[in-house]
Image (cartoon, rainbow, N blue to C red; front, side, top):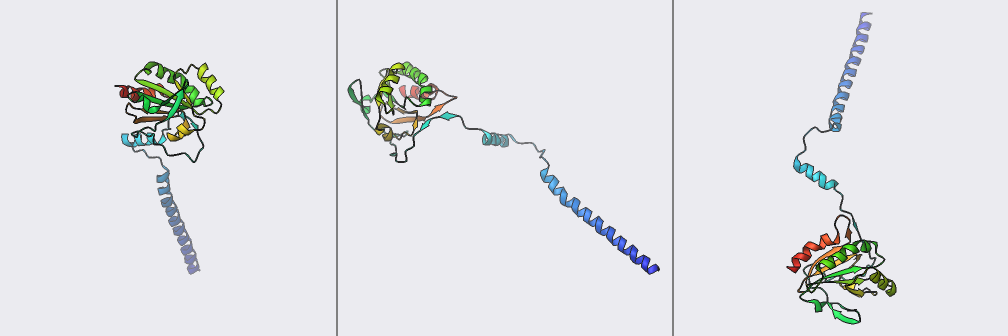
Length: 218
């Protein structure tokens, strides 16, 4: 009888020890997980905060009409290179880009159906009005396919500087233009100084090109 009681007590004691060991292992297993999920209270350095801000910063909004043409010739009109010479005509008179050596030239690639080009036009007119003269020339090169629509738009918007229709795209291909508007600033010696693609909502064409233009005119 006594041996049976002792046997039962031994079984109960072994069971209690097993439950105690199991509970301790569960607690130990949950502690690291809780530590991993707990938010860090460590202070963030200025450098880390700056890196996080740059990672989360959205790029400035820009609009442009993109041309879908996989066969575009690679441009020679990149900054630091000599601009390709173009032949055009205005008011029945032919001219070449090289005729303007000694002046700073801004090529304005656009189209009347291009929304961003229309939005940029008032500031482009202001740029031409402020700087235009014997030292600076704007040449607008349109991709319009309808000459009448192009002429009407130019007249109605008083675009009274050199205008060229580039219906077959030869000029824009020579400069590697794939989006409208695109502006190419050319120095007095015929070297491309900079390219500006699209319209920036936060910065007008006058603000973007003006500083480079002032420097080139000095």
